[in-house]
Length: 331
Image 1 (cartoon, rainbow, N blue to C red):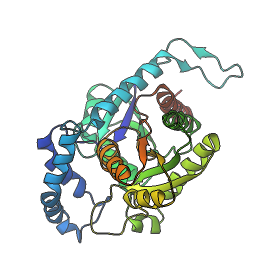
Image 2: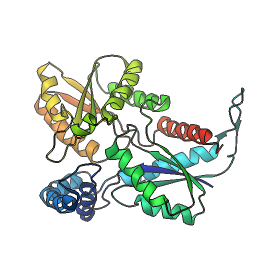
Image 3: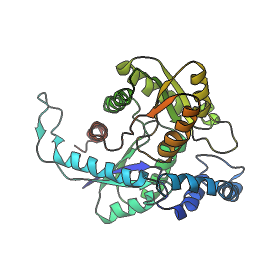
Image 4: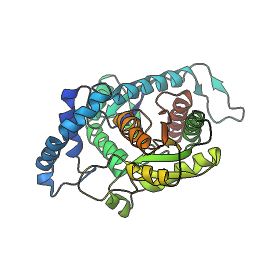
């Protein structure tokens, strides 16, 4: 049996889990290095203590937990159903399809910083007899801090099992993903009586990662370039959710809002470009904080729907997975 493992960040499943989740997050040196290695966890503990109540209050505003794990599980089930319903028969000239799968697919989820942890899911796959697994990061744009850290955790976990694997680490310009994103933006534009300004808001990253050659910012802009070929018009890019005392990518989204208001923008559509699932960054930062700020600035702010389990997005994930498995000779 072939397994597909969807990798994601994870999120606290209760307010009590916020502290441990943040501790796991800030203890990861692939995200942010807090002094020498032996000081990483002590300094992470200090940061968590400082930020804990504020973050818990934010989660309380969106239902007391992160929706990301449940959404990722729903994405996995939708992808599993899609793959097991119809699998391409091969590269024949007539593009024939079979109404039944060549062999069953089982789609799993593995989270970097909260349950189900990647290592636990790998152990589950072994118990269930998975002989090979395709690892698919749900971060469309590669960064060592996101996909890199998650794949590293997976490789460490799978080393003890006789399971063949391949990893997909970037798919920022996949046509199906671009199509799904463009559909979401068109729906967002339709919320306004006239064409709004478009602001792509990406999760921020320490500037030193980009300076060291991380492709994240380049791939973000690559996605935007492909999407805007379908949408047309002017666009802007900003970054949100920075944490820690280092320099992060700029401009920030909270800085761009008054800039755009100063240019006379009255209607603004925010596109959370680096997110494929709703979580605190969309439901709290954009939908509450930025929306309130925009209102104070005299602007109407709306957000595009996250891709979540949209049929076009699930089709894109299926196409990415099938192409990779063909290249591996698994199909």
